[in-house]
Image (cartoon, rainbow, N blue to C red; front, side, top):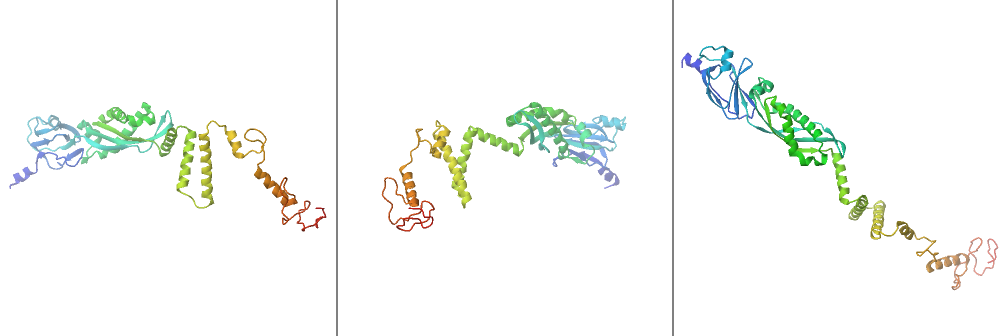
Amino acid sequence: MGLFDFIKGQFIEVIEWLDDTGSMVYRFPVYDNAIKMGAKLVVRESQSAIFVNEGQIADVFGPGTYTLSTQNMPVLTALKSWKYGFNSPFKADVFFVSTRNFTQLKWGTTNPVIMRDAEFGMVRLRGFGNYALKVNDPAVFLKEIFGTQQDFSAENVAGYLKSVIVSGVSDLLGESKIPVIDLAASYDELGRAAADKLQAHFMAMGLWLTALTIENLSLPEEVEKTIDRRSSMNIAGNLDQYMKYQAAEALREAANNPADGSAGTGIGLGAGMAMGQAMSQMMRPGEPQQQASAGAGGSAAQGAGGEPATPSAGSGAAASERAAQVGGVAPSGGDAAPASAKKFCSECGQPLAPGAKFCSSCGTKV
């Protein structure tokens, strides 16, 4: 191989990019190698090729195969001052830009977004979802975002785009005034509205926001617990029924998990008494509570019919027996106390000797 063939081999004759890296922009490695006039440029579908001369964007090529000449590089020809046909090698930076759709990009709130809700007042919302984009204007994107890096992926600009999306979604939520409870039913509508709202920001960077989805908008954990408690009360019907339900649940738990010791027994008895009273009131809704408590307490002043209460036979017999033991007097209408029964002085209470006429302690006549 002669010197001329060696020099000729240093010139780039085919310029193409096999997009297997997932990058948005790829800088073709020209460096010190010169591009041969008449070289082939291969631009595949979902690609654009941009020639840059000394930092200035020159010609942009869409999908197709081109033979480089002064005719199809009018801007570069003018920048290089090629007034006549030029057939010598030249140097230029070549960038391939992928115009395909980049999907499954994530967005999410770093800090909660504060908004005002008609029912709950001020609440904090967190949200996350996905978005998709593609390069709409390769020249603008190269000028505004890419610069002169070797390659560029969607992740390089994802941080900035995420902040733009969060700001737009937060502003949209505040303007929509949709109640927090109804947000889940509006995810699709909010996603489309957010994409339309943010489109101008993306186009200014040479991008096109093709889709934006909201996967979830959530409240803080303590607010969600409050909503759960309110839902439970609504299901129970009213507060009275809810408390009875809670008492029944506590009684069931106490029965299934008996505690050892007096504390557990007391708790079980207390729950049982409360449940019994609640069940009694539920079964007798028409009876006044005051009358029920009076009956349960056993009032000694009146009977069930409002008349003075009469002592029962059992209680009278017990009183007579106690009097007989203390004073030695037989109950009224009954038999005399047994002779073997021990007698006591009615004055000082000391025991009396059998057959004594006077108390040996105080001298009281028996």
